[in-house]
Length: 358
Image 1 (cartoon, rainbow, N blue to C red):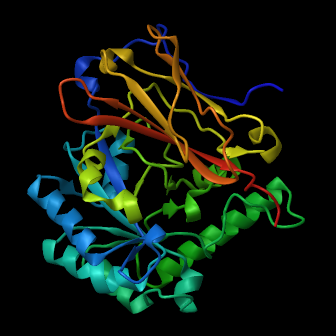
Image 2: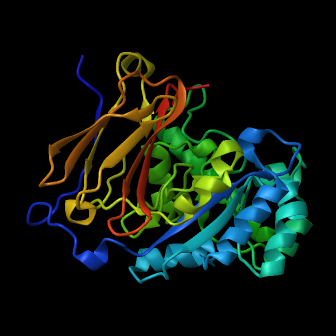
Image 3: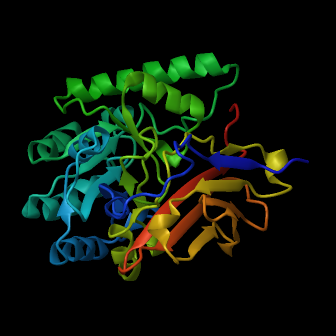
């Protein structure tokens, strides 16, 4: 059986020229994703109010600038420069603890943030979610309210009887309707989307692109001008991943120096994935890396092999030694930024056996 190979490659003039030194720290921002801010909700989707307070204090004390997501996206898309050390705060699902616990701390600092909501869940009070009135209050204080889909469903999965075209049409109509409900409740028109569960597919991304929106996933790394704006990275903040001892490395990281990133299908067929893990090939700007070692990690497997196919041209191949299990997985790729205590960071999500009819 042929190996699963996914190329992160761009057509590069003059054969993979290296970046100039000042482009090794490109304009970028680190986007964080929170769900619950609570001590009583599942650890896998929660930070405690105390940990959240520590995160904000860290950003404040270390000179980070918290900016609004729409402003950051517009700046990156335009090619203009952002200040160094920009952080964006986002919350998925619109849980009530965002209003009761996070909002008071953010309002006190005057910091902007984004809440991604499923309008049907808000209207029907489905789960411990905020109300439209509470969203309007946060919006008036500087929050952005944005689209998380009409319902909290897997956008990359087709329903029974749907072909790809019907799936795309349904998704388009549902996203537009969700957007109308946000606008009808006087909460702006941000044209931002967060994928529920961080799962997507090329079909889903094509709908986002057709709408002219920007979408965000749940894979880690810094967002830069060369990022895929149909799936911008965000660092999940929950459980062990919210620990303060690694927080500084995450919020100070830079985009991995690659050429223009191509859209990749993260969905893998179970039959193929059961025999071997996917191979990820990156084209890196080795002039920025210097002698830094590139490290890669796979979900549940720890460090995994990296092999230079051609170091001079920057071709690096990464493959986990063991097949990936069913569900969501990631390859995380890091390298130290020469002369600093910062890290280049990139993450590729893999979804095994999840893109199917249900």
